[in-house]
Image (cartoon, rainbow, N blue to C red; front, side):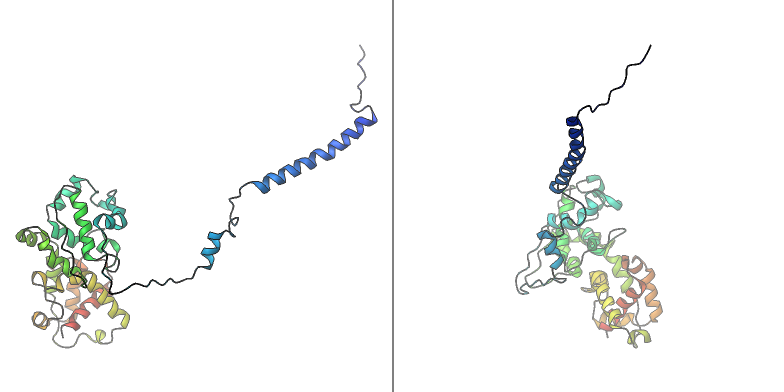
Length: 307
């Protein structure tokens, strides 16, 4: 059986011309359509929005910003809820790092039993994984605002603590204000003193027992650099003043020569050792995470103020 002869697909000159035109036209049309698609599609790659108003504004923004406010204007305090949302919720909303979870009465019950004074003092000075003041500074939130946040969290877990007393206009309430004002917060005076004994006396007892030499401080402190002096002052304001600013629980009052005189007797190395490693109920470094150099600088700062 013979096979049928195969015919060519292009049999006429017209078909040949059509095939040639199609061979050129189709690729050209495809390229045009692809270019149009790429040009009209929203692009999200790096650098595609570098000329947008937002990016230009960010690039030409000044490095520093100046905030001008009236120093004599009355301070507007944040509420306890606002402080909680801005600072405390990072750990207390989920119970991270062992923090009592917000609204969980089981977590808060043993802490509420310690009394409001102790909770407020702990929030100001720190405990365990919690840094003092929730890692903020007194310029960010005052002791009064920290106290409002403590009452807000505790009351949402079953407590009935009143808010701390508002500082008088024109005065800045420091950590000492917390310790002094806390008994007036509405809790009975006797229970307030007992509740604060576990925390406030921990810092006060050790520093109260730290004796100081009657003579000039150690040679190194006489030549203490400005940076070290500032570090000592800062640590005092963050930790030590909770008891020493007002002489709470028998702590020698800051700057009071009569309180400090009986303690200015032992060598400076002994004093540093008490402050660094603790004594009695006072935890090492007053419960802070400060460096050894900063703790020594804080001791020197208190000694110099009592001379």
